[in-house]
Amino acid sequence: MEVDIPKFLEPELIIANHSGTTTEDVRIDFSEEQMNDLKTQFFLTHKAVMTRKNAVALFKEAMEKRSHDEVFQVIESLSLIEYGDLGTKSMDIDLKDSMKIISQGYQIVSKLLYKIAYYEESRMAHYDAEGHLQYHRPLRPDEMQMQVQDNIRNLSSK
Image (cartoon, rainbow, N blue to C red; front, side, top):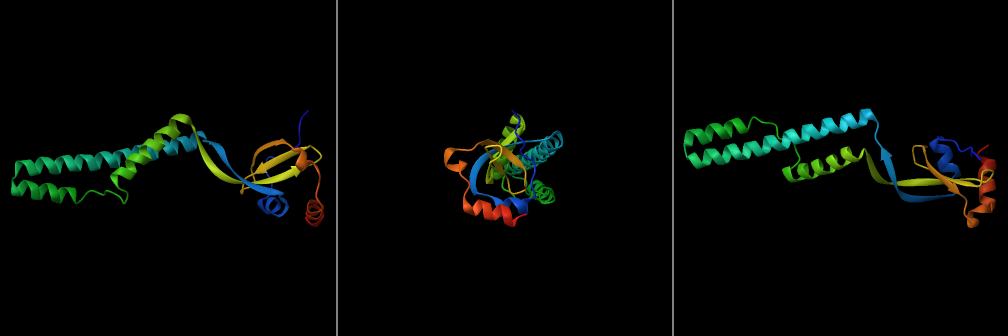
């Protein structure tokens, strides 16, 4: 038995006709293009972290030599490098999170979902705010009975 639940609904229709909302963890699978973007961002972040760590190593080495001119030159050369706004610890955390997402190929996020009852199909569909069907399930007994408000909403949306 195949159910006829639309994969996409206009967000305005969902908001006007939903029978409830719920916040749930939703799995988001990444496309090949999105995975390539994540990998590119990972390598750029990794490069920035390594640039910072190398700068610290150069500075420590110059300080150990205790040559005033060498320390001044190293500080001057390090001041020309673009380090970005994030701290190294934040970037290290981002790297770990990015590596986990890249290796899994998906991400779990908490989303607000809108419930739309399909009484003809005896199904409850859950749509995100953009109008995409996340999943559907059988109606529970307490959801089986149409309410007067649902009838008014259905009539007014036509």
